[in-house]
Length: 162
Length: 177
Image 1 (cartoon, rainbow over the protein chains, first blue to last red):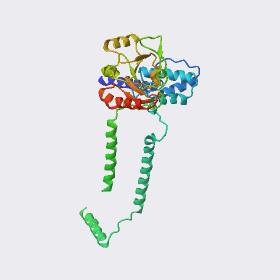
Image 2: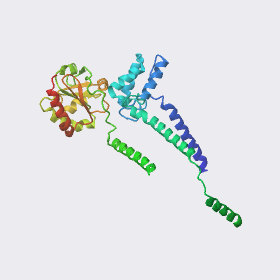
Image 3: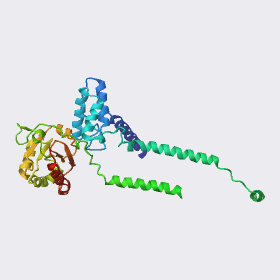
Image 4: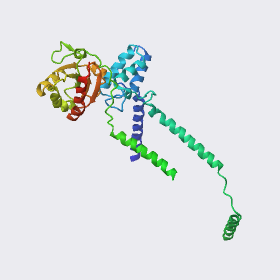
């Protein structure tokens, strides 16, 4: 009895989770009217990619803060007046710095962020190759006549015991 | 031996980086506006909304721009120190009342004292955006040529005032504008 109640609950929770995931990227609570679907696409891309500095682990689309709302409005007007994505991004970076970008460009400072994974991959590959080569080169251990005789004796003993 | 020392060494380096990272305040985001011209504005004054005020009226002077609201805790915390600061010589303290109600702002200054030479009202927050304001109170110091030389995020407390603000203002006042 307990089980029949429990199962549907688990499934409904999973379903809720599924739906919450699907609506996440389309956030930005306000109703916006765009003259072209292309503008709407760009608007959603931009509010997804720009960080809200008030609640730092949220993007502009997810944040409820006043500043996020102001910046969404700003992006909306900029997109409507046909500013390019780059112009909007430059506008934000000029004021808040590159920290607002969830997808920071590769430059001397951010290279510390971008390069280590590739360096680690490269170093790992080299170490792996060296290990494989050493293993192939390693010669099998040579047994002396005494060793052979001893192993022979051990095998015979085993046969006798069983 | 080496095969144990290398991972240990890497681990120690990682711990050092993490320890340094823990010392940093994630709320403090360095402003890209340092050493850039202070964005221009022309905003209504809090105490006489029909007249406007802007940075052009301060050309040739070293000035402090302090962003605040009547409902912000950090602003109340720094308020007495701003009052003290405003009594000193060669201090031009300008208040930017950010996204606030004029009545509440005026009431607060009447009740607790007004440290500002001029207070301007940024009701739609657009000048705040130009200055990259994201956590009131924020304080900027602007030199004689209109360049932002310093930004402080959070309440401006005596330690910061004595160690950084006053020496910097002294230095900037000696520069030729």
